Amino acid sequence: MSAQLIYDLAPLGSIVAWSDGTPRPPKHHCNRLSSWKCRNDVGQLVQKLGQTEARDISLPPSISLLLFDYGQIGPATLRAVRPFWLPCDLKFTVIERPAIGTILVLDAPGEDAELIYTAPSRKKARAWLKSHDYPNAVLQEVTADQVAADVVEGRMPA
Image (tube, rainbow, N blue to C red; front, side):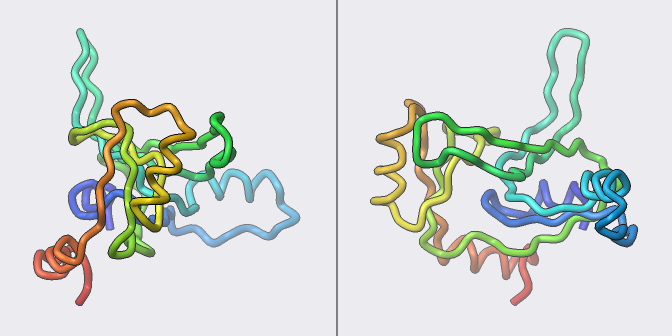
């Protein structure tokens, strides 16, 4: 898939892999492996931003993938998020979509909201929010209707 298809079709919370199609270098080639990993990795889709206009600058739409997240238990969190501007020359694959019943905690309402936490239940999502400072957070449940719509509309294989 292209980055545009991920933007258009993949739901927030999906696990997405990206690749430039080159083979993985041997482990002992540290520099080559590090460079390769920048263009071949896996992350969680946490944001879809539309085109942004500010003064004389126009930024194209983008998707952001969470690479890792430290400190989920305490109030301080270190998040490594990688943006990909559209269009992008890499190939993307949806590895996994969020399960039915999963609660997505978004930082704010709206189209450009960022996924900040994924919880297995509404109770656990609320408990997480009590210990983290997101006053405008929105809880969004992944429903069977959304998954069925993905299948019918061709966003997910049956």
